[in-house]
Length: 392
Ligand SMILES: Cc1ncc(COP(=O)(O)O)c(C=O)c1O
Image 1 (cartoon, helix red, strand yellow):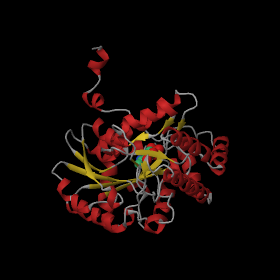
Image 2 (cartoon, rainbow, N blue to C red):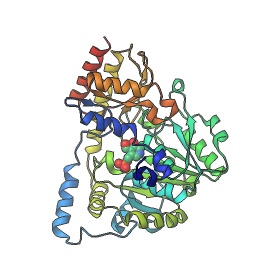
Image 3 (cartoon, helix red, strand yellow):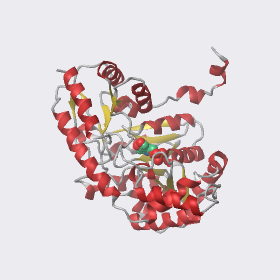
Image 4 (cartoon, protein in one colour):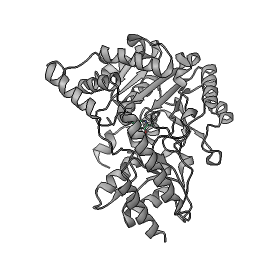
């Protein structure tokens, strides 16, 4: 055993690079591989944001300096307006808003603020792979809330109360879901809110995908718009996908005043502030009119139809439910296989197609794969030509 093995902490030994990134890294090393593994959209940051930032850099020589830890006041004030429009809830820029470097960093800050060793966080199963790893890194315990595919992956409210213990700190929700694309209903979400409030548990809404809804868009409900749960809820909005700004690393959080006060200690000690240039981009993104989201949504909608059609052509390999939002499909593997990881590795090694094994998203994800259809149509078609040939 090397000394490095010795000095690495127990929690880091237990954590893993998520299979989403592992498959992306493996496929990048295989010439000619096509990847449906990583949810990295083909879109580019809209022109009005790029041009706006350039103008800011030209006119403001201080643009490259640290900002206040919780973010530029102008951006937080803009978030107050945006949040009011989106949810109808009035918040205060100083008391409730914190700007962070993407929802991943926002989650990290909140988990760090909350978790003592052995504390529990409830995650839907399947859930986003990195939520599991983040909790493990803080010596917390992910508690899985199993969802049933035969029930369309909806929230199973009856099972929730029995998962709550004295150690439960929070429930994390992503709607539309990564990896299933499910939009959780208002009724289910309100019940989660009531249960959380009754047990004094925090609800964490991780929201990268609410701008990507299709024909069921009227079913979408943002639990952050329920006044009743304002004191029990952290809402995290990511700029990564809606504004094609994944590399800028920007998000904002809206949270109860007391929690912000505590979370500021973590945020200040670990990152000082979100990158200032990205905050300028965020201000431009939120404050100017643009129709790029409709454009993204339209393109994703066609890609969703394409991937559904291609999946339906291989019923001996996959069985798939049509996703309602975001840009992932989560088909069940019906072809003979050992487990989803081995299936994904075989697909990559034999026909150079990268998908993410469903086991990365929790125990209920086993025997599934996640495919991201945010890539262009040629990539989707090429991946399926190879899959069809392989499973002929
Ligand atoms: C559910 C979920 N949360 C967070 C993230 C990462 O968001 P950000 O780029 O804002 O860190 C992703 C990205 O795929 C995601 O799917």
